[in-house]
Amino acid sequence: MCLLGGYLVGAVAGPNTPDRSTATVASYQPSTDRLCLSGDGVKGQSGVAADGQLCGTWSPQGASRTPRKGDRFRFVSVLAKDNAVPESSTAIYGDVVK
Image (cartoon, rainbow, N blue to C red; front, top):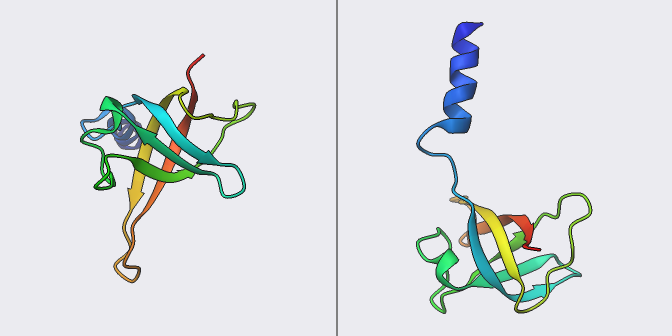
């Protein structure tokens, strides 16, 4: 039981815990949930395109407000790589900063 508890604490608070960043919404397509973010908050993130934008599928939580171009957006992104698929897919979790 102690080992399981230690593992969970390490997984949540360990050194590989994703950092929440804040960026600017560059675009959002509601029909596909495709969200593109730009600005200093995306620098250094995995999956940033050559144009400096981080684009991916947004997974809204609860009563999240629909992002609009220019909104500030606090997020965590996860890059999923699949060797069978030439493109990587990015999932974006977060919400518009109120």
